[in-house]
Length: 220
Image (cartoon, rainbow, N blue to C red):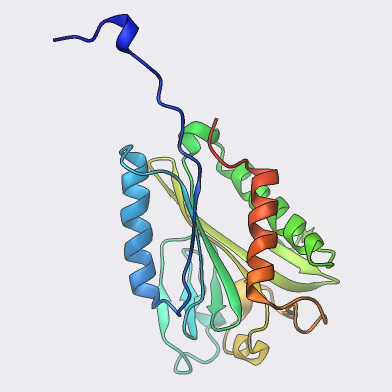
């Protein structure tokens, strides 16, 4: 039986969900969760989500990774991943934000989405008293020429996953096992190295407030 026109209502989009992992999350487990959530979003079974977490020390290789840029392959586990970009490091003291949003509702423009991720990180850093900027040398956010945040995304059925990583207070020496993001000679930095705020709750609050300014709390 077909519903009458009076009974047909448009369901408003659900607010974007924020999840915070209080313990370190293994990389493979995070990938499985992201892929399942992205599929559910694409099928209309779940709403959008940003997941904030940390990983144990590891290197990831994006789709453009050059094996020559893995300087110390035996130092930490190396994970091949479907996100864009080259080699990067994840570990304790780094805030990883996996962003699972529906570009069907937000505009099918991956380049614009990446620019919005950059704007988000710059705004969050400003909340923490740090001036971040884009660079012509590569995707990510830099402070006085040193890289403080990386971006690597994947899109499937116009739903995004993977996302960004912000160096809060990681061991920066751990980056020496790779050429981070293929940027030869570019140093890495962190909020701690800059003498800025490093409380993870404060960082998370800045990320959330800035995200809603850039993206909004729900799709159009």
